[in-house]
Amino acid sequence: MPSITTTKPLNDLKAAIDAAPKGKKIVAFFDFDGTIIEGYSAGLYLKRLFKERSLSPRDYVEIVSFLFLEDPTDDEFANLLRCCLKNWKGKTEDEVRQLWLELFIAELGARIYPEISEIIRAHKRRGHRIVVASSALKYQIEHCAEALEIDEILASRAELVDDQFSGDIDAPTLWGEGKAQAVSDYAKRHKLNLDNCFAYANGSEDVDFLSGVGHPCAVNPSSRLTAAARKNAWPQLRFRSPTKVSVNEKVRTIASDAGMGLSLLGTLVSTVAGTPKRKALNRLFNLGSDIGLAAAGIKLNIIGEQNLWAQRPAVFIFNHQSPLDLIIGVNLIGRDFTGVVKKEAKDMFGWGHFMQFSEMAFIDRGNTAQAKEMLAPAIEKLSRGISVGLCPEGTRSYTPKLGKFKKGAFHIAMQAGVPIVPVVLRNAAECMSRDSLWMRPGTVDVCVLPPIDCIDWTLDNMQSHIDEIENSYREIIADWPGTTQYAIA
Image 1 (spheres, helix red, strand yellow):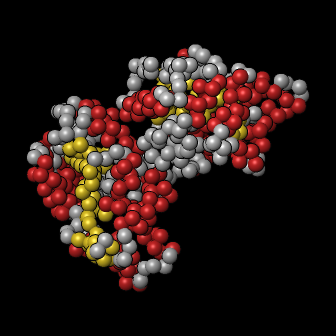
Image 2 (cartoon, helix red, strand yellow; image 1 turned 180 degrees about the horizontal axis):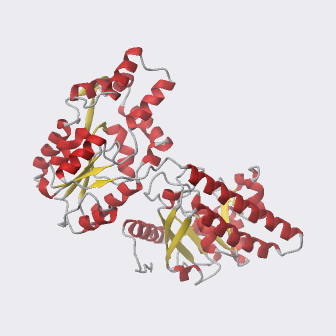
Image 3 (cartoon, helix red, strand yellow; image 1 turned 45 degrees about the vertical axis):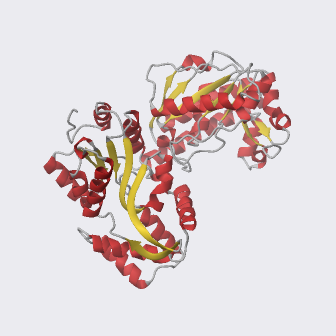
């Protein structure tokens, strides 16, 4: 396998992974805090305990003392862990999992480094096993691991007595040498040759862990790990914060919003002056989205652009990770289209008025018993030659992992007798995360698949067609096609 120098970028690392042998006997071990996610998951929990006033003065002393330690021992880390675990005493695993699900939704999901997602996908393309090895507890890791489709977790353990937490740790933690030993034991159980395996970590306590494999990589390394990486000629990768926004990015976002707002104002003026509404809307969608993306410094790299225009009207479907998806969708479809939104949005101040002006199709999602009536507004738009765009996942996902597709978009296409045009977006969340107000410059990859004729679909076979389309999204996101064209029969 080609060596990776400390100065080579992420693309060289992925190329090296692509050159590695295939199969589950090659394992990529990932530290969690500071490596998979920005910052420390325990910090988010401690912040919650602080707000709830659940920490004692002694706990505060323990936490602050640990933060100032240059090279904490396993015992010192174990004492810190006990500060958190005291608040778990008497709780069940389900209760603790729910707590960490709330933290994942609120903050942890947004802290996942997109570059780590890329590295994991590169390993998965080679059939490698992905394992988290972390001094954190598995409950801190589980939801991120599920989202990234990680195979296994090696983690410190909290003691359970009669299905309730005792408030103490169970067995040694995976701090420092403990993590290296856990990985060594794992390799023995699975008969692995660690010389063929990979490891990624960020802290000085992980030197033994990284030294134990043939292909170590320091990710966002601390100063002491940077020194060790230089000494051992280990590759180093440094990633941009997925959550912090610069002043320049804020200024560009404000300029983007202002540009789109002025485009809307111009459209309102032109309709009052007598311009046909549909013509004015087409101008708004084209000009406004062009200005919005350009001001924010966001470019689109489109594969299969001709498929956007092959058949109209159509139902355009997008995977959904970011508020930016709306602007991208508007820019791609371009003209003679509208969106599909829940009817409650009609009453939103400002935004609801804009959606009414834009002739959005408002549907009653509560009327599931009468699917035809519920979807009638969208079908009526299509009957008039107006395409519709919507996201079959129903809501923005918290990570790059694709959500399950709901049936509404496909019912609309079947009942209206129009094709479905799948549009796959990659890395939109890197330019604007799920709950962010701010955009960041970058390039969003877009793959537009050929229109899918659903004239022969029935209610009996519709789900199998949906599954096929959904799987094509997963495959394309996992292995971006370059110039290759995908088609679904």
